[in-house]
Length: 404
Ligand code: ZN
Image 1 (cartoon, rainbow, N blue to C red):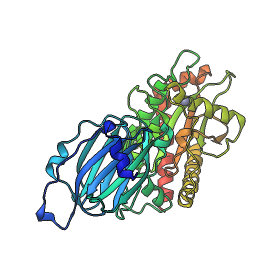
Image 2: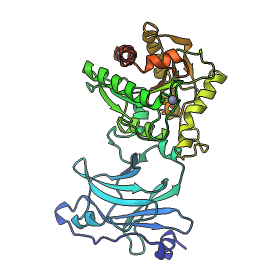
Image 3: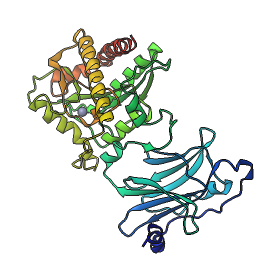
Image 4: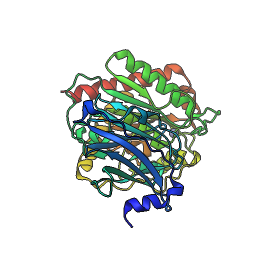
C-alpha cells in the first residue's frame, strides 16, 4: 500500500477539510497552496498534507502558549476561500489557520491540543493524479521535547524569529543597534507556591515582586527590552518559561527564586548557571526541588530532552554556558557589595530553566525563607530594590563587555 492509499484507508478518521483550488492567473509564476488535508492514522500518528502546484522551500517552527506549529511556504499564495476552512480538526490539532507572512509567504498555523511534533517532513512528486504534496508526519512527544524542538526546513532567508537561528547566531557578536532583550522569570506561581517561609511567606509572591522591580529598573535605563514569563500569579511549566524566552529571542534570561533549608541559620544569595554535573550534592538537591514544580503542575519530566548531538548546537551551547558564567560572575560581584552571599556564591546546577542551548541564563536564589531574618528582608520592597539595582549594574556591565 502506498502512503497515500494508507492515508485514505483511514477515511473514517479523516478530520479535515478540502478546499477548492482557485485559479490565480495574475500570479501564475508564484507557487500556490491548493489544498490542505489532515488525517489521523490508526497508530495515532497525525499526517498533514499540503497540495501545491510546485515544490517550494518551507520552514517549520513552533510558538508556545498555546503550542502552535508554524509551517511557512516561501513565495506562495493561496486562494481566498482557503482561509475560511478552519473547523473540523480534532485529533492533536485544535485549530488550523492560514495567512500571509513577510508579504509573499504563506503561513499555516496548527494549534495543538496534544503534545505532538513533526517527526519528518518531505515532498512527494506529482503522481497518480496528485500534484506536488508536502507531507508532515507528527508523533506524540513529551512536554519537554516540545520545549527543545528545533525548527527546520529548506527556506534560506529565515528571519531570526526562531531558536535554531538563534543557535546559529549565538556565537556571533551582536552588532545591530537593536536593544538587548531580557526575559525575567518569576519562579513558581499559581498552584505552585514554591518554598514557604518561616512566617508563612510564599516564594512565588516574592519572586514576582522581585521580577517586577527588576523589570522596572531595567526599563528605566532605556537600554533594554524586557519581558516577563509571568506578571501575575499563574502556573507556568518550566518548558513554557524557556519557550517564552525563545519566543522573545532573549539575549539574557534570569529566573528569580528564594530558597529554604532545614538549617534555619542558612542564609545568603547565590547565582546558578547550568552544568552537566551539579557542583555539589546540596546544589543537586536544590535543582531537584525546583524542577519538581512540573510534577506539581502535572507534567512528567522523567522523559527529559535527549542530548543534542548536532555540533553546531554543542558549540552554541558552550558559548552560551561561557556567557552565562560571565554574567553570573558579574552578578555575584555586584551583589557582594550589597547583600550577604553564600560561600562560593556562583554555583552550578542542572536547573531545567537554565537548559536553553542558545540563551545565556542564570537562576538567582535571593536568600533563605527558612531564615527568619532573611525572610523579613526579602519581604521589604527596599531590600528587593537594592537587589534589583545590583542586578541591573551587572546587566549593564555584561552587555558593555559583550559589545567591546
Ligand atoms: Zn524556587
